Image: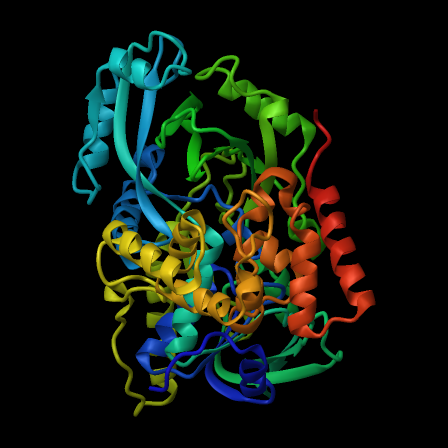
Length: 557
């Protein structure tokens, strides 16, 4: 196989336009990425079309947790068992982007359900038959209080268990890289505008547009033996292109608040609020905490509603009020540096609309919709690989029934590392690699550590750009570890085609102070120079990003 040189959008688009594949995947979130990767590794020719950008839907605005689901043990122990096994695989397959974290659950006299009496049994059940990083245990409350002095005083008990955290958007991108490296053809900013049917009404492909901001407008088509919907919260809208069907989703909105704080000492806090609902205060990147997540019904009747999901002033104050229960007087509106919202593609349980949003199952469903489209919806980010394996099993069986001589390899994703994953323990590798990058490109230590964490083994490729042009070693924003070489790398090797692509999904600048506005000018300049943007397109890109922030961010201070 030739050396992999990253995501060349022009080359991938050339393969897809007018092409024929055994499988066409519509949707470039984590599930679609996993399906394309699995197909390619089994020897299927596969193309993937993403309407906006990879991970632009739920996969970049999740809780950023890799978790089996402590609260799901009550109603869905099978989901917890599956998610536990997939959590282990995910942490092992992408250690530069996913890592274990200790979660602490403090219990007070007013803590619902997960109280001091119940907590030991809860932790024991979470361990039973599950492949956890470390066993759950009860901690000395006085010691926890001493180590976390901002915690509400005098907890009656404190439980400890282990789950994980991740950079959700970049992990999705690494799976896209993995699929492309295995032979998949992938394209972002390529919305499907219609489905192609044969004389018997079977869907055999799609029409799509190239919506690269700098591209000449044009509509194209691609055909396939099997078409797969992995459209997440857009599933009902996509399947509607094949003819009206009953909605299959019950979309649920979740919001998060971001603080610049190390109040938890690198650990996560769990906040039971009643009704078997848990909130989390999690360390999603060094020096920052994210608090969430609400669970409310949200309309999914238009792309516009789903593309720009707003956080409301009421949701901000509600979430801060919950946080006051465990860290009183620490976090108020002035401490919120960013907020974001996403929509979960939960399945609508037939005849059970009386269920609360939080009680709606997180399991997934695979089915064949009108026109023979294979569809998957529901599930959790953590279980994306299993969902992909099960769907590709079904698609492969379907293809073999129509082509009896078709021979395919079995699924191997359970033992594959993602693109960028080092072949040894991350901590030992990243220490040595950061030193090597500093020597190679004369970069500061914090920048080198950041590159190792964000790009894994591809960090050296970013550093090589700095060695070639030392000006690219400059920080995008003073005091932050992001360097200008990342802009060029994103444009040339990661299909970055807009300011939002870079600020929201190639980096986490959107989720830090100023929500990326302090980096916007440098990012537009860098992308514009690499992608040949006109002065008018540069102005429009900056304006579009500002407009996006205005629509999704409340004025609550």
